[in-house]
Length: 481
Image (cartoon, rainbow, N blue to C red; front, side, top):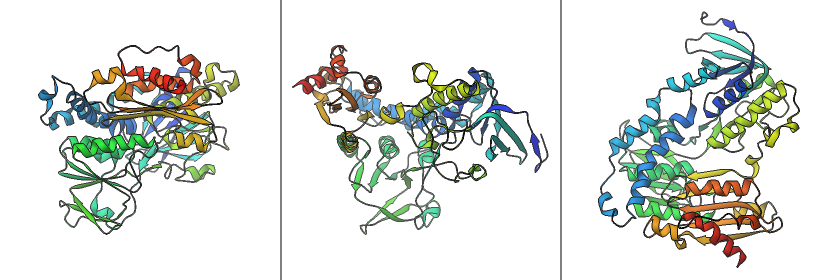
């Protein structure tokens, strides 16, 4: 260790990765697999947002909620599951899935692949140079022969409203790590985080009020997705108010309730308020100005995740704003790692097998599952997006309740499927499913969209009977007429 204020010079690495979430871990893994020496810098927990405050804890909270909802729809079982959830057991499982917010296992994994882990804040201090400030103030300068990969992700945005600091609002981090269910919870925002956390905490005992500035939930999906999720949340006891905006928040007593003022002159009182109103890139304290880039900005990249205007700086995952999803970030990481290795070996990228160096799926085949009750899942373009892009398309809809498998899955099944057909190329541009248990259907749709499988060939992909997957046949029959 060095004295605080002094900079220790280390041996050069081939690759330096800033950020050890799933994206940074995968970049490091791919670089090491190619034989490149690699350093990884992390200021918080190795494993990142997904492991401790997003994907894993949120899905641990939601799984018993959805399982109970499914069981309540099965004759012969429903009577046995009418009681409340065991909140303590649910939270204990959540804590287990986050490794109790300890990252020993993930640090050990990174070290097992041969990456060196540096604890502290990493900042660019020049081309191919990263200075790490450790928690004790010591500094260590790392240099990269071939690449620096920025994998710092995003942070939640809380609007600058009157009273916001005193109100101590929740962001997604507090919502997924809370130690008890608040009696009353206001959720501001109707996107994925908002509806998932509303679903979870309503089922765990909170009285949830959703405040939506727009006209409905899940605005980036087909309109019927938000409608079906809103119906279910309302039936579960949540209150949904659309077309309203928060103008101020007040919490006069530190342990008292928060009052939420609305632009229509009304107000709502709650014990906690969650703002799920967007994300911003973690680039404001990254030293971008030292390499001619704007601090706090999203980093624009090509399909290999190389930052435009550079030949050494990569931005991988949420920080490049291409697709803010863990699985897409890990996909980009595999692409970027392969591209870095190829360029380090001076191998032309266009000679790589199976498109290994181009993140083409980020343009047209991004899959996402919203783990509400019912689940909502989509890949590719919505009807509105396809039409705006100038495609000549047809939307083909089918009622999932009419599929034999859905009737067996649950009584009173409600759901819907839609595929967007490119009438000129006769391929699928997008698919959306909404209904209980449909998350596992999505990969078949992703293969069809990403693979540009001709509709004529999809007729020969025979779905097993009686499964919900039979909706594929029904969609094709509807298309044929």
